[in-house]
Amino acid sequence: MRFSWIAISALLLFSGCAQKGAFDLFKMDETHERAVEQLRTGSIVLSLETKAIFSSLYLNKTDPIKYNEGENFIVSVYFEKDDRTNKVRELESNGYTVSLNGKKATLIEPLDDKDPKRSFMPIQNAWNRYYFIRFNSDLNSSLSLRLENNQTGKVVLKYQK
Image (cartoon, rainbow, N blue to C red; front, side, top):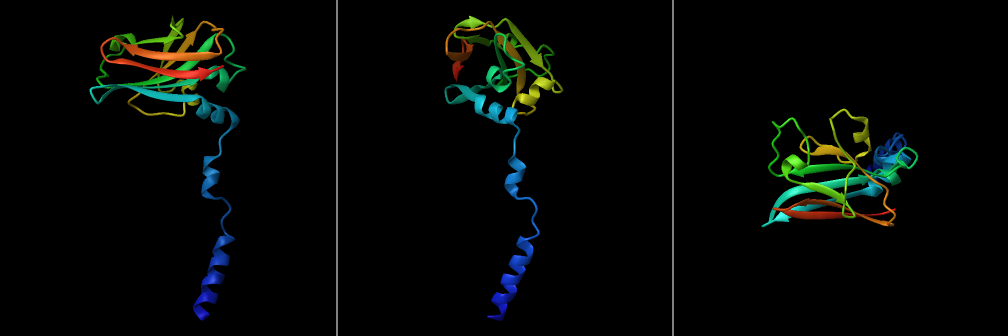
């Protein structure tokens, strides 16, 4: 009985000390919440081997004030056999093409590690390559962003406007 009073007293004493809980570490601002909602990921697999991992973020819904012209995406791509010695960080140099509803991009801009646009992307790691991609405005309410390689296959990520 004496032990239980000591245990209860200690429990009450220490439970009052905590100012923040573990869930306070996971609070996000509104833009970051929208970015997590808009993140899509898929992979190209051939013969049980992952050839590419493709993640994209639809910026028009993430930050509609800043990205309101055209269809804007930030994508991260992991290539199985990526030549990191190649200074040109282009999708085409790895044999891949990106299209939106069958149309080619008007701008593909490689993003370096310190580019502020990368802060929108919830996935950050050293082995992915990051790009800002813009397409002309599309009137369809559904968007299909496709990463394709004639030798390994394709992956399609779907969005709603």
